[in-house]
Amino acid sequence: MLLCLTSVLIVNKYVHGYMNEGLFSKIHYVHLFLATITPVAIYYAFNKDAVRAIGVGILSSSIGCTVSDSVFPYIGGHLFGYNMTLHICILDEPQFAWSAIFIGGFAGIFLPRLFKKITHVTHFVHTFAATMAAIVYLLTFGFTGSDTVQIIYLIIILFVSVLVPCLLSDIVIPSLVFSESSFNEIMEHHHGHSHSHAHSHTKD
Image (tube, rainbow, N blue to C red; front, side):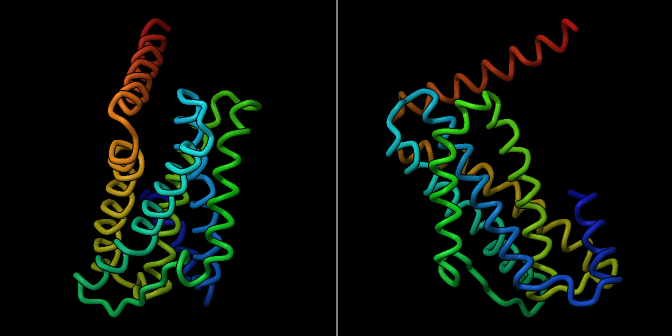
């Protein structure tokens, strides 16, 4: 996160006009696409109901990404006294945002057949995209990143903006939408996979 922030602040300082609404939207679409793939692929691996799998992916990404990339940065900026502008792509640019979500939903069904560990990649990359989107949003719609105080505020907002929506999309929403048994099965698999992965590293 700090590496992303440092890189973007350097670019923002030396390349005038680089941070803009168009750049934010493009990163946000990538985030929506990747964030839909992960929950769809995970759910479909245990329950071959494509409609329900895509449903949880659409719900998770549309809410989680909007909160992470726009709502929390907007609220955080206001709390620290900056004049922020609210921009929500699924409402302001629905044709592109929802296209990214639905394409991600179908990709979550088919990509795991070609790449077994696709969720590991998409989860990592969509977390990176979330960080970049939140940074660009803050610098486009209110912040300038011109002093130390702003950078400290940026770090605080970024931490909350990325962490909370990840918990929301990966745990809270699935637990509310699906049956307790289905949710527990998925969570047990994740725990078992993480434990076995760590155990294999220990043996090595």
